[in-house]
Length: 266
Image (tube, rainbow, N blue to C red; front, side):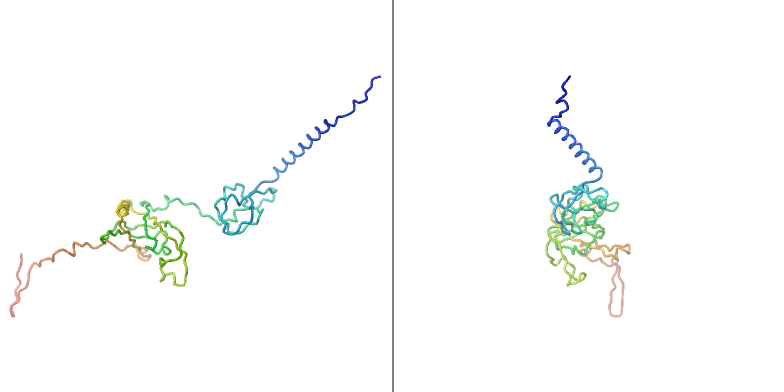
């Protein structure tokens, strides 16, 4: 008779191998189920206040069931870097598109000027214009003033597209108090330049005036004037007409007592 003793025994290492394989199968299956039923969304790494600007250090991730993803949830953190929150978000809470200050559509500068105009930037002192009372689309003439005090028109009917702002500063006499009211406080900025839409033939005179250090002066047309369709003419009066000798009359009248006689001077 054959001895079968020992053939039914299973070694401990073999059992451990089987157990590990089964455990890995279960873990992988669980992960697969999790992936198919949940999603990773962007969440606040710490509490973020209203008005804060988002940077990478403020962002983390949260895994939530797909059925519980809030509307407008963010999947890619790069899409919200630099955006400003319009309401606070608690730590660990999902960040959504509704949490941000709405951003308007991007308008490229090349799309801004009216047809037949080109864009040019002019440098101006911060107190030259009451910038708070200017708006895009305002029409103006540009005059250049030489160091001798002579002025000449270098651009006609220019359109204001925008202002290039400098460092923020407290208000300083660059607000038109008769319009805004003396009691109102306005945050002002230093204006580095104005972006104008001008006629193509005016671009070179503007650049030349700035190149030789002439001071630029802007003559703003009023809204009623613009609505009438007839802009006032700011062409300077020719100095030659003032300096010219008076015209000699064609004839004079001689008076002698009661007698009057006209004499031709031709």
